[in-house]
Image (cartoon, rainbow, N blue to C red; front, side, top):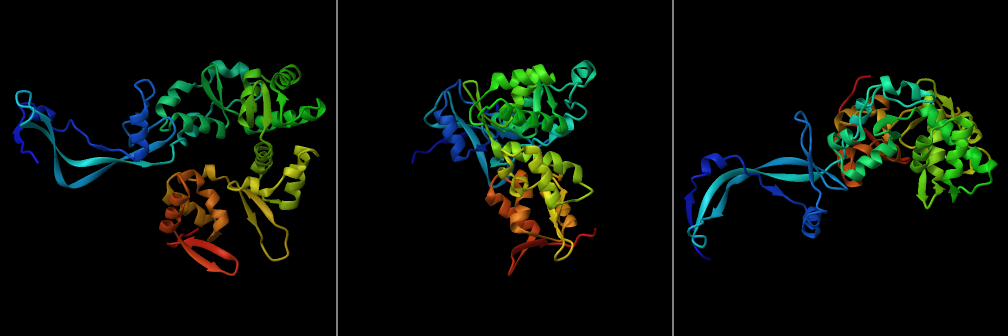
Length: 366
């Protein structure tokens, strides 16, 4: 091994603190090594009051500082003697590591407050507060793909470049109309002509084409002008629309299922099943033999901080079945492994003849 002469650079004082060492995960190395100048896309996002994240086109990573036990030196070859002398430019006592995290899309609900799009709102657009698609894309800590999925999952329209969450009742109305026209016009839900559906909604119900086209794209695949409807997604949304009115006044399970099947119609009533609504409701049995009731309890309304989420869950119920609680953790864990870590940290597992239950590690007072 050759020996090098270490010397302090004249630029050491001005360089101190200007270098950062970032440890790359294998998947990020592959992106950088395989990308050209035009396709490599890595972004650091974050408001001054937020912890920074790094985003690729597909994923979001938290940037965390890890203190080193030994000091690392940043050195560069000497111009006069590049083979034998290096200049010390800086000292590093920490490195930055990247950890996959859930995109921080919850901010959208706060930023878009009072901007809801509802039937007949066209005349109010001039006086409404505005938040543009481009502004949100640059500020929200999420990758391009996660941001696009977030808008779809949160039912947020992009109208004239501005973001507008659609009113749940209006969305349910549009979906009911689409189901009705599929039947009345004898169209296959596997390949329905989009232009025909959009036109009839505009002509007979004055629903803007830009709105109906986006709603259609949320609930299925669009290819070559044809819509392949995601039956489960449409049925689920209509079920949530009914259940949303029962946050404080539970509805009997049989009555709810009857209403749900009536809304979706005879053609699709066989697709109605409570499992579609997992993570949006609680099933209650006050005593043996009594009819079960359902309460609207959406995971999207729970705190995004894991500790606060578990407090809320265990204040609502003292113990949870594994298959129930996992649906209320999907949006705060990047994968099942991270979800299991959260359960291990914040809950205690108990097993009996009925299966696995989770209770709080600490006592909460209602």
